[in-house]
Picture 1 (tube, rainbow, N blue to C red):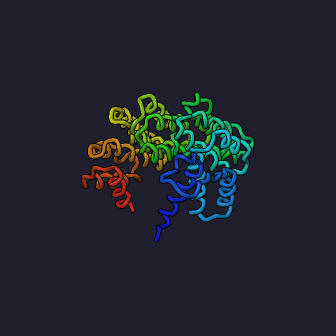
Picture 2 (picture 1 turned 60 degrees about the horizontal axis):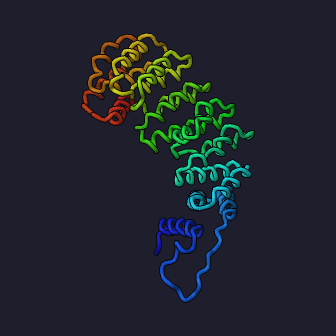
Picture 3 (picture 1 turned 120 degrees about the vertical axis):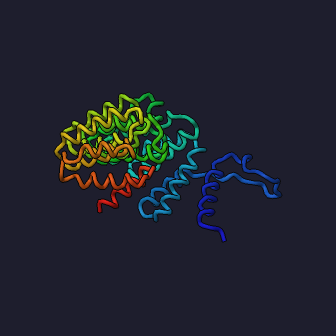
Length: 330
């Protein structure tokens, strides 16, 4: 019995095959003449639209994957025309993702220009958000740069529509974690620049707190230091969290900044984030710094106690130390 996974993969191969020239498919001579079957791209788009409207999650995933596979061998003009005339946001997102796949496969970033143009300028905010989402997981920061930086995430984060701003944040968080695994300086620094360009404190806070800072440069670290004085306490807390993950050569000045924040801050949540950043920077060497802060905010001394107890376990991985500290504070 053929497994569902094999059937799904076979369907993708068949999709791509129907779009390839016939000689590429011929293996052995056959007594019956072979006939090339026309691959209906418009039919795939209709199938995608139906799947997105009423299909199961598995069927939606299949229809999207099938369209992306076919797009790689379809004429660019046909795909670009379909994208240009599409107005349904969900289908637009699928077509944009297909364009992004083709752009990557063909090493032709210019194919993304219509997607970027709609992300920045479509009159419908739902369509703008869909165009932004189409770029998710594609190395979009690099693609934007290769298209001349005419459309950037710093620009898109200032969109008046919250769904567009949400899509921008989701893209950068996903690209940082799932495409580059936190190791790409360009993506991390773009996330910081986008956070600071935002007028939405929640978007700023999420970008700062959820994107890895292990590869950022000195100038970006300095810009994050400035956010420790932001008006919004959520942004100050997020900046403190982010600064815990900066490169080792930035640790001394950053530790001093976080200690000052803890001593001067009045918001308990910001102070907790400052402690977290101090520990992440110093790990086992943070005990003395924590002890120097005891009594500054007596209500938070139990937080210091929990960190000290966790540090005594000698854990070397940050996620394990954080998990243990949270267990001790329950």
